[in-house]
Length: 609
Image (cartoon, rainbow, N blue to C red):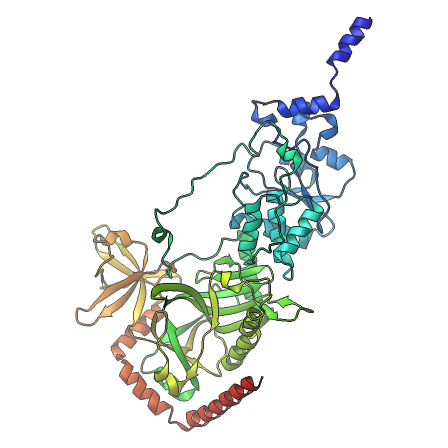
């Protein structure tokens, strides 16, 4: 009897012995592989608002591998009477840890899976955008419940995502402050230096010398068996050029800027813009019409200013509290990390929220120390709404002044603050307001550091017109049309314009693909939008470039207008001679004198200030 009792005692492990044995066991079945360091990693941290950072709960199928005192699963969470969950966001790169359908959705808890590789790869920007969107959606609809966010251990990927959320929901916060908020709630915080560096880089901040990456926690370092955090994680090789020149990419207007956003977020922003402007349409940007001889009469009837026509890429830009969004002609949104303060006031700091700009992305080329350099810049030429309020009905002169005073100047003022933690020079592109000149000064438009292809004439008293604006005029050095190119089964070319949403074949039209860089086989351009100019001598359209920024050709109305302008043949000399006559009209003489005097007063006022 005594021998039997002693034998049983020899078989009973202490708690410490059991934990050690389980940590050292290599389980072949991936469904019961305990992640490295998981047993001794704290279960969850303190609430960060309505967000709870946590390590991954392991389903009850792991119970045989986990000491009873260290088990952590959703059933245990629910029965313990802890905070009510409404959403669980899973950042692991595997599905083996638990079963969301039976463990979460069955209990009325929403489950979102955002696969993020472990190891040394930080979550990509699209995953971050998805995470922030899901949290924002939950906050707006379930104010009495909490979000549990977990990766494997609830520190690096979890912290990375939560810091991104904090930065986008609290514009006054710096990365340093957000990192501290997370580390206070979930010690020691993010302990991978590349994650910390990526956050400072993304938000255009310089990491202070006082910020030191915490050491790897003891529960992670002490693990003897090395098992990948997520078995499904993939590693990808880094491809680099053989020399520095190969790694320098030439900027192009066809480059895709920014990051994708979730479909639901894009739809909500499309609806927001339509509601804010009280319209119902796709891309609401104003489109100019070609300047023919009939349109010249408008210059005589209204008071116009002029500016150059940049040969860049058209974007509207929506400024919000949680980021800025480039809006292309297809009404698609991509997020860029930019900063637009309302005004610099440390006691009442605000950023623009639901402000809509209109402009064009250009590439400036210049020399520095004899070396050719490029820089991307967004030229803002109009303001459509500011902080949720449409200004489309106001005259252009007023919109332009509000744009300069409320959007551009606060950015420039903040740049001058030497000790400010944000670094504008780290943004993906610069921002400038596009100047407009008196019609009488159109000949004095200076040479520019980016491509131009004509002039724009803007009515100074005109409202913003959505879609085609017959009062907004463009004159191009060479008139062009954007056709949809295709070929029939016999190899004959077909050029299409758009009419009432359908493709209209332009009978008798053809295009020549001339010069270097064009494929000898025209069939390779089928289905693409080709910008073409008109060869008057050969009576044929000539390809200029493929419009990768457009998926639809010009409308039939635009086509007729351009063709008429080609026939009108308003050359530069003809245009300038007409402008000289127009600016001698009494209306222009009087207003040019008043505008010149007002400009001088502002100039002297700024000097005094």
